[in-house]
Image 1 (cartoon, protein in one colour):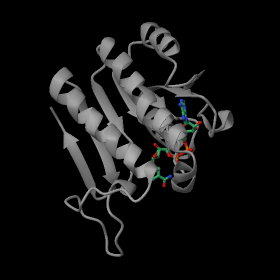
Image 2 (tube, rainbow, N blue to C red; image 1 turned 120 degrees about the vertical axis):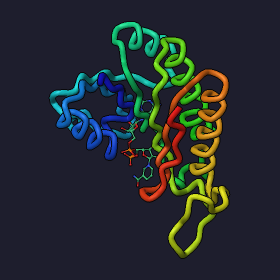
Image 3 (spheres, rainbow, N blue to C red; image 1 turned 90 degrees about the vertical axis):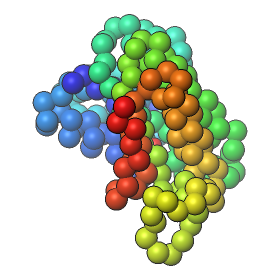
Length: 176
Ligand SMILES: NC(=O)c1ccc[n+]([C@@H]2O[C@H](COP(=O)([O-])OP(=O)(O)OC[C@H]3O[C@@H](n4cnc5c(N)ncnc54)[C@H](O)[C@@H]3O)[C@@H](O)[C@H]2O)c1
């Protein structure tokens, strides 16, 4: 498969890109380097520096390459910062993910893996379970929950196929 990894210069995205390459896939990494590092991107991956909020750049990207799937890691991820700078998190995570989804679907790329977070659940001391209440304790978790909901609506209305592994032991999946 030809896989677009957003946020692929970050901690998890770069390791995931390397995993895909080891398993014979073609990988393009798209990252604005606001938090990630160019050196973390595997050498065999194509790297494109850009922002998921930049619709024109995404249009060019999806016109230039035929992706089979998108794995979406690009986000701001600090719970404390999200409470100090709410607008930044709402824009970068929610609004910009909407741009990405819109451009993907316009180019008929319908397979998405979304990197959500355990922070969508109410905090508790025991291990989390999938059926636990969705009740984020911070805005970071709330942005991820809102993106999950947005993805759900795109699945229902536009045929998007998705998975968002919020927890290792839980894969909430719409196989479609
Ligand atoms: N690290 C964890 O423990 C953890 C746990 C659960 C979920 N996640 C999720 O996994 C994903 C990756 O987390 P990470 O720990 O690798 O974070 P990270 O900060 O290392 O990586 C995020 C990457 O996204 C890029 N980015 C941010 N906004 C962007 C934008 N608008 N356009 C393009 N690129 C942008 C950053 O430059 C960075 O390289 C995040 O979505 C996070 O919510 C992480």
